[in-house]
Length: 219
Ligand SMILES: C[S@@+](CC[C@H](N)C(=O)[O-])C[C@H]1O[C@@H](n2cnc3c(N)ncnc32)[C@H](O)[C@@H]1O
Image (cartoon, rainbow, N blue to C red; front, side, top):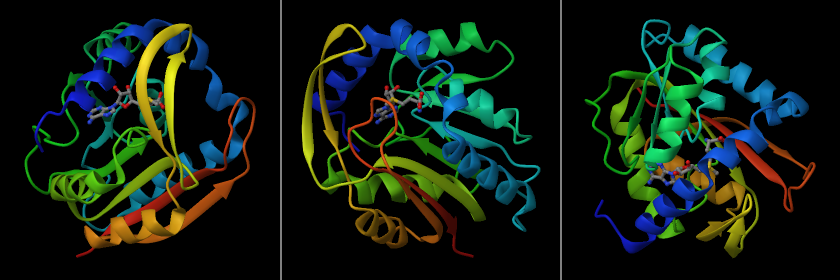
């Protein structure tokens, strides 16, 4: 997928907020038992998967400051992170020196075909226009082993919002809410079949329901 001006705006925005994002969201998962339950189920599926998931790594794509990468790694699946924003990756490396984090685009991964036991995309596709999701999910599926699992967290709904300010900084971010049924269809189109989904009501500062979809690569 080609670099677009939107992608440079996403990168610049997350570079600007990286330190404050990490500070403000560092312990967010502690108060979200359902989110943690989905991560725990994902970790268990990866470990149990017949495609050799226990031995294979999981990529946290759009890992931001690495808080979810570290949480997942703590659940017993070897996890590394990839993010577009060099400042986010710098924060992640500082915070979790024992884990691997790389700068890169999840739309064009520097990862061989079929090698991963799983992919996590935790609110990282929310800035991707819906028309670009099919190509993105094809790229996710490419790097996963047959039988590997994917967990995606997203904002459920059907609107596009514009964020000009976030975490105390000026930013320029489009945010897309996605209908859960459409998300399942798009993943299915890339060979990632739905296993389960959770839609929960907004908590804390959230303004819309939140979607979590667990899928498995065919084969
Ligand atoms: C809302 S943050 C979520 C970060 C992290 N998953 C978390 O929950 O803390 C979205 C992240 O996705 C990254 N991102 C967005 N588009 C990306 C792309 N095409 N490739 C890699 N990272 C991307 C951003 O840089 C940002 O760090």
